[in-house]
Structures are given as C-alpha cells and as structure tokens.
Length: 179
Image 1 (cartoon, rainbow, N blue to C red):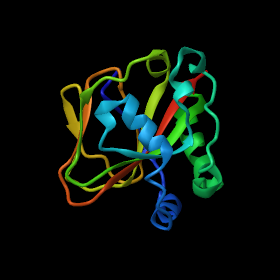
Image 2: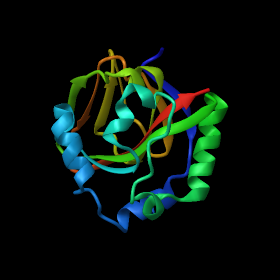
Image 3: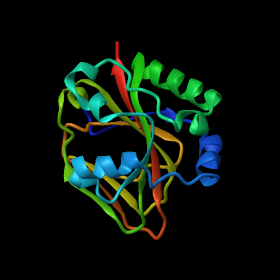
C-alpha cells in the first residue's frame, strides 16, 4: 500500500462549526486513551464511535458503539456524503469514528498501529483544522494535508505527526472496514 492514498475532498464547514461551538476535549475517553497509548499522550479525542474493546480482534468488522458525543457532533448530511465518497473508493462501513486534536507545538512520535483491528481495517483522515506547518509522515513520505482532503494512510507503516505551528490541529479519523 502507498503511504497516503488521496480519496477526494469534502466540505468540512458544518463539522468545523460544531467543533468551534463546543469544547469536549477533556473527557474520560482521552484520559483512557492516554493511559493505553503513550504515543498519544499529547492528543485529545472526541469519540463518536469508539471503545477500548473496539480495538480487539472481535471488532475487525463490527462497529464500535456510538458515544454520548454522537448526536452533538454528527451532521447527517456531512457523514452521508463522506461515507458515499469513501464507498466509491472502498466499499464498506466505519467501525470507529473520532475527532483528534494535536495541540500546537506537539508531536505524535513515530509508531505503527498494532492489533488485528488496525491491520484489517483502513485508517482514513480528514483534516478539519490544520495549516501548512503540520507535517504528517508515513514511511519516508511527508505531506501537508489540506482541510477537507480525505486520505487513507498506511498505519501499518511507521507514521508520525509534527504540529510545528501555534494552532491546534484537528482531524476526523475513521477506521473503515471494507466488504
């Protein structure tokens, strides 16, 4: 697999607006995630479909439960369009969905995602808030992802993110199970 596969673009205005009007970053899910994944100790998440159990083998195709943030952050029109675009690339369904914030001047150090669920499913990133000083590296390739671009990344290869800016970076991240 290529380090980055460009899938298309989507208008992220409605989702960006929901994020700017709410602030749920400091939640129990972020704390739990920090305790299990040291590499993500600087990040914060707002999970829409997520649980620690969803990382296990039995969730390689099963969707994680919706969290209490689902109704607050989901824009049905946006997600219908997003899923349609991803399905034109790879037919399937989401098993995990979350927003991930990487604060200004913070890093996600090089790592690979391990576990059966990560090796079977595709990792999709959509930048919601970003700038040209945020570097995303997979393998030996480094790119700047623009707002609204949809990318599949090879999370089985070594990858890292460096937010070299003075602004927080927010991505919508989906784990996608292809049928």
